[in-house]
Image (cartoon, rainbow, N blue to C red; front, side, top):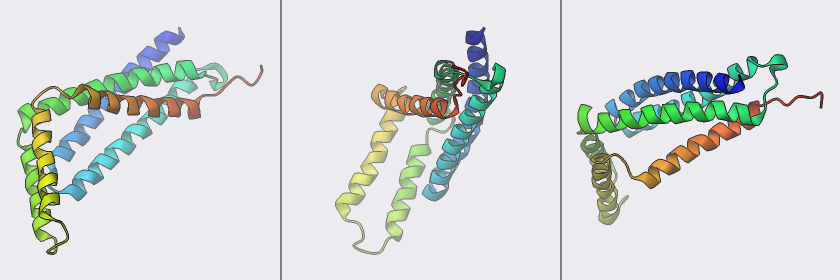
Amino acid sequence: MEKNKNISIGATYGVLIGLLYVIVLFARWTFSSNFIVFGSIAFFGYILVLGFLFFEAYQRRKLEPRRVIDLKNLFQTLFISVLIFELIYGIYNYLHLTVIDPDVVNRMKAGMEQMFDKMPEGQISAKQREDSLKQFDEMKKATETWSDSKKLFDFYFNQWFFAFVIALIMRKEDSRH
């Protein structure tokens, strides 16, 4: 019975968070040439995801008698959720950057060039400028394939780590033992 609760709640919240994050990603990529707005939306999106993971943990704990839930069951629920919303995130990002708006990285590069042009003379060297702009070319190459598996693993690991920390914070042990 516990496993069914973990799966159903994890899947439900995974889809919900994934769909909300798609909206955030759409906004983020729409404002890709303005780095302040882009960064603010990215930060807001991350806080939104963490908030929903806390809410999910709270809701999962509420289903238990006396609201007592162990770390294993709570983390299992969050793990399923992270797995699903990260899959939705990955698919949407790939589709957005390759099909919906493949020019995003070029707009980001142009925005960075404009930012460099507005800087006072000597604040950034020609080499630093060139290196910074070269990163966009590498980013463009990375968006043309599914993903660099190491970077993808690192990102997923970070999400699962936060899910584990949230499970540690939100778990409630049975005090009668």
